[in-house]
Amino acid sequence: MKSTCPKCQAQIELHLEAVSEKGTAAACPSCKAKLYVHRESFGARAFRKIGQVSCAACGEQLGQEIFCLGCGAPYPEYLVTSPGSKPTPLPKTEGGSGSFSLPAPSAKLYLPQVSRTASSDTAVNRPQNLGAVIAVLLVLALGAAGFTYYNKLKAEKAFVESFVKLTYCIHSGQLRSKDAATKIAAEWKTASVQRTAPHMPAEDEKDFSILATQIEDLQAKTATPPEKYKQSSEAVAALNAASKKMQALALSPSPTVNELVDATAKFDTEYQGAVRNFKSTLPEDLKQELKSASKRYKALQTLL
Image 1 (cartoon, rainbow, N blue to C red):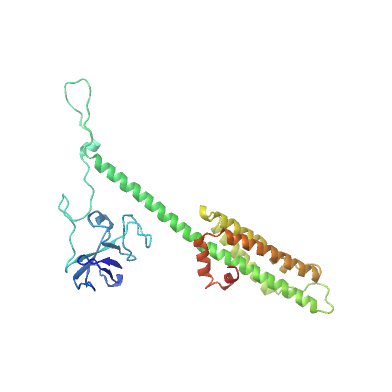
Image 2: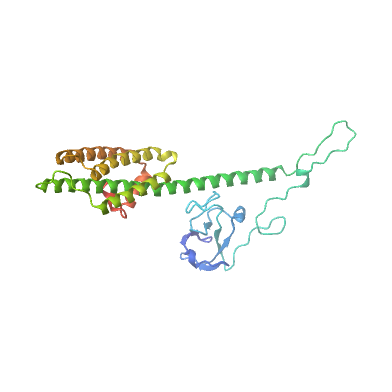
């Protein structure tokens, strides 16, 4: 957890696990001042200075936003670092409580009083708590904006995860199809009397069927990409179309061995062109995700 010593302003690090529900005593490593760290709800943020509070979920220092920039949690509880051996109390509100609350709306806000003057015109008193109404509307608007932004980040993360898996499955299928077609051609050439192409083992055909099903499922999950990933989504679809040609060739080889060799080379060249186009459409964050995934999905290393 990142925090600031309220006495010497030194930057200090505290482990979230060490902070209990009731609060925990600590000491500044720089000035040795006694400190106390305790938890408060998001509603009390109005009474705490920005820069002295940290997200209770991830420890990231909080700013003015209504969500944590570190972990994305909306309306996060936070931890306060204060001097001494007891937590610094919140400023007292009009009701005498240290908790955060909006001013109570006046009855006139909802039931305007009609002036009983002798004038022929009926006069209505204006609401006295217009500021409170504006504050409530502002909080609601900010809450809605924060919730929308959080959902947007969540949707983008889910898309990227499925996109990386889809790319891996397509490229892995291309490599296996090309390898199968090449082996069939080599076996065909060495057979002295064989006039038809050797058959792919039934187990390999089953594997191709399973892979095709996985690709279809991942395509469904990435069917509606975020705006910034639309070009990459179209490029991976072209990659899949080129890969399907090589797979079809491996499952049903050409009539002659020479035609099989030529078709393998042709489809591989077409796929490599789709790969170049795919790379050119990737935004930087997708590139980094694919590079990171290549440590787990080794086949991606030959794509990048």
